[in-house]
Amino acid sequence: MIKQIKTITIGIICILSSLGNLVDAQAVAYAKPLFPLRISANRSFLEDQNGKPFLVHGSTAWELCMNLTREDVVDFFDNRVAMGFNTIVTQVVAHEDYGKVGGIPANRYGVQPFIEPGNFGTPDSAYFAHMVWMVEQAERRGLLLIIAYAWLGASWEPQAGWFKEIHNNSPASCRKYGQTLGRFLQNCKNVIWVSGGDSYPERDGSLVWNNMEEMIAGIKEYMSSSLFTAHPRPNYSSLDGYDKIWLDVNSTYTYSRQPSRLILDYNRTRGMMPTFLFESDYEGANPNVSILKIRAQAYCGVLLSGCGQISGNDPLWKVPADWRKYLDTEGTNAMKYMRGFFESFNWWNLVPDLTDEAVTSDKGDSNMVLDYLAVAAFPDYSVIIAYTPKEREIEMNFSKCKKAKSFSCQWFNPRTGQYSEAGDHPAGQKVVFKTPDNLDWVLKAVAKF
Image (cartoon, helix red, strand yellow):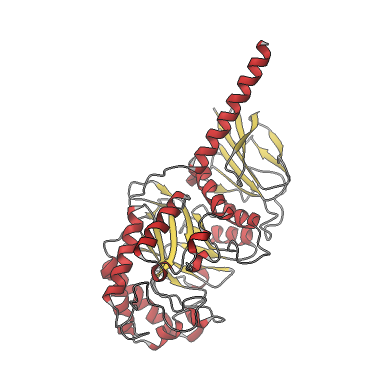
């Protein structure tokens, strides 16, 4: 009878412990950062003005400013915070309202961004005042906004961007547009600016380059410390087309070969600037893109970049009339659990395990995100994190952390946010772990001294 009571008690304790871990991963109230963000001393990640590291963990909403009322904006931001996001990707002015035909869209109050359509030198103050209000609402909630000031648009989709108008405007008009943005938003500290947009300016020689940089110069007249990144063509990064003095943060944009592209960009930017996964496959955009891939590319984004990642949902990125239907999705919940996992330890100390020191088993094909074992570890190997998108054996090397006596290991379920124990193991040896099933898992090993 005593043995039976002990067994039941232990079982209850284990269940409560598991539930506690589940709550921690799902419903965490994160401290708001003190904006503006800056680049860390080692130039690997972003941090706030108190020196607290900021993990870029974002949701894409390109047409937020155009398609929502103020009441809707508040609801959208509150939901994104509740779902664990700390970053929203959007743009100041859309060239086309996706799904509708023709014309530059007004905001929900019927206000166009320019008094003369397409003339950057004729900004409508009412439009930009609404933009300021939106940015301020985000800042109150601790949200970073990564904002494209004038989306160029891809060569295969020119109607979606401002390339033609940037070419046709004068340098003075482009400078005035930048000054308008800087003047209106100069007191907003929660902004990182985005140049480009599915493209590079060299498509039409130097004129577009020059006018785009007039916009940047205009912004910097009022927001001299603002950080800038750039959105390149698919399967490239900011440095491939925007290697300019104003580029502060590199971004990776790829729908394929995510691990190898992220590794390439990490090696290119190490010690120079942070890099993050800006855009990859969108949840719901393609029936061939699984939720597994959404999770896999996100975990690769953090483990192989060191700065963070942005995820997207289609059609939420367009912020359609029925946008509320797409707030609580399987992919969004996975991002909530993911944020909770990384914020539970000092994620900013992670370094990609590119020399196979932390994990010695085969990592798979780095050109296939659904095959590759993404691994990162602290410099002293006291913490090792491995994400696998499939069933496999993972051999961890516990001999690299010289002062450790043992390692406490856990499996983290990226689909539910729950942890399960993987045992304590002596230091000074290699240990092989088998995934609990044939789904994706995160293995976490922490040294005990």
